Structures are given as structure tokens and as C-alpha cells.
Length: 266
Image (cartoon, rainbow, N blue to C red; front, side, top):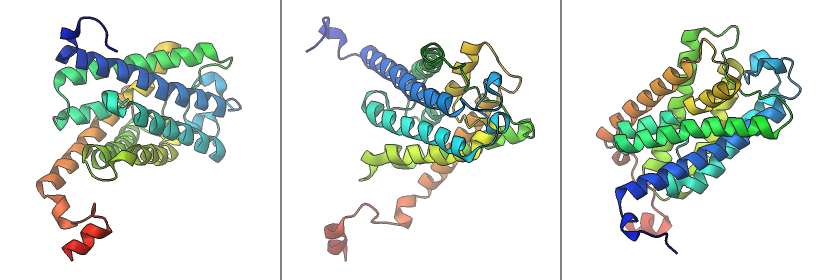
């Protein structure tokens, strides 16, 4: 079943439109469930009025920290698995930036996905704010003892881990690529366990931007949630390009061989 005007169906404009819609809906779904779960986790926080996710501000609780990390990780895993074939399932301007740097995406596609992701971050924040009776409590801020420089590099290192995971499990095609969303979700899980207490664990400008727009509160350190992930993306791209130039697959060959192929080579 096709929509009218079939001449448009085989055009680049249609493909960009489909990717834009898929990325908008995917980012919305990813962050909706992540934010809603974070709302639940922070209901009993000691500073609910501050509207922040950062563990040092809401009162440290390993159970809350684990809950937030799990809901972000599983929401990302499920929605990447769903939307991978539509738009790539990136949901993150930092990841999209990294893909453009490696020439996986054209500048036009990068711009369209960026708009879709930022819009999805705003829309998901709005939905959570109006659907649930608790105040929107998902902004990311630095803890009192975390300096701006530390905040930037925490976000950068955690984002680099996530982006490099995406490169090696999804961008590099191999027999395990079909389960790449599991590894990507786990990468976000360990990053959240580390980052939520100090920075709120953003790793994603759209994730931090949306709640700020909906609440109307832009903290002085909001810029680190753009600079840090962008720096992390650049770090991951540099290392990825470095090992590609060294032909990393030759150093440890046969990783995708099954038992039959391994016996034949022997």
C-alpha cells in the first residue's frame, strides 16, 4: 500500500522525510520512557523542587541510581532495536555528529536528524510533564562539588564510550550486529551508573535540552551538556579512525567465524 504521488516515493526527499519522522518518534519514545521512569525514581527525593536528576542534589541512593540507569538503558535498547531500520536509531546529537564526522551521514541528513532529536527531546519532556501528577524532575545539573572542567570531561569520556560502542557494534557490520542494541543499552547503563551522581548522566544534548525548554530553566552550566558530548564524539571518532587505519581486524582475525569456518581455516 503506497501513498499517492508515487514519483516522490523514490526520491532523496522522501528518504530524508522518513528518517526525520522515524528519528523524531524514536527520540520521543526513548526519552519519554526514560524521563517517566526517572520521575518515578525521584518521587521520594530530598529536593524534588529542584527539578534535577543529579544524585548529589536529590539525595544519594544506590537503588534510585540503579533504577534511573536501568530505565535509560532499557528504553534506549528497545527503541534502537525498533527504529534502527528507519532512521538508524541514533536519538542523540552527539552520536549523529560522530556519524557525520565519519561520513556515514551527509550534512543534510545530520541537520534533519538533529532537528528531529531536539524536537523529540522537547516533546517527550512536555508529555511527561502533563501526563504525570508529579513535577518534571529530570533536568541535568552539576553536583555542588563537580567543577565545570570535571563536568565537561565526565560527559566527554562517558559519551566516548557510548559512541565507540555504537561504532564497533552497529557501524562495523559483523555477525553480532543484529544484537548491537543490547550492547548499546549496556554502554548507556554503565555510563549512567557513573555519571548520574555528578552530572546527571546526560551524554546527550537533546536529553538535557528538552527538560530545560519545558521547565524554562537553563542553568549556567547547561553548555557542558553540548560541549562534553561533542568532545566525547570527537574522541571516539579519532580512536575509531586510528584503529581502522591500522586494520584492526587483521590483528585478531576470525572473530566472526563459526565452528565450521574455523575448522576449514585450520
